[in-house]
Image (tube, rainbow, N blue to C red):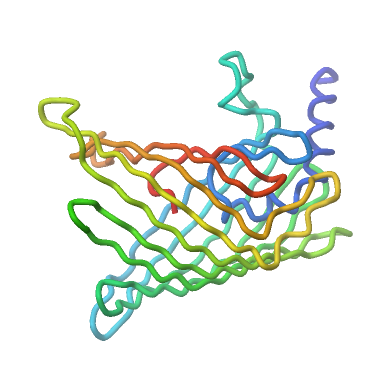
Length: 262
């Protein structure tokens, strides 16, 4: 027990320094982040349940439960001998509801609301609030599957204790292109994709001085892969896998993609 106190205490100290960014992990997505010289590996999943499909008279209704868990000093892009994390240093849970309003030409307008909580080692727990408006189009152009996204997000955190509350405002434009290419098995072809995410963060989180500065303009480029048709494990379809790199000032870093990139 005594031997494990040192690493645990160090994790608590780092959590206190970087907690402001972990509180928004449900909006940042899965990836490796380097803040204040410390590697932070964040995994995000967002289970959802469709309560009602949209029609001409009523919007669709969907429950979404984004969950993000983070661990310090673990980077899967490092050498193979990197230690596998044995604890969770940060956790964010932010369930909410989304409403789908069909628009002309295949566009979907989706306002949403979320609320939840953020937990970190140390004394930085807080309540999370979020609201957004998303406009998305999905279709096919010249044999290329495409998703286009425009989204405005306002997220806020009300910390317990002496840590000041924080918020951020982000406007996102994104595109995801996928095309079926060569045959990899007799019955399947490779589904290769590229994506781009351009964010304007007009009101970024107030990161501590030790953590560096965020850029108001942030750009992420990446690739994804799967097969067509997708492999199945029982009733579950294997998700797209990929990776990308985010250019965001001192918060630049790699991201691992599970499923759709946005």
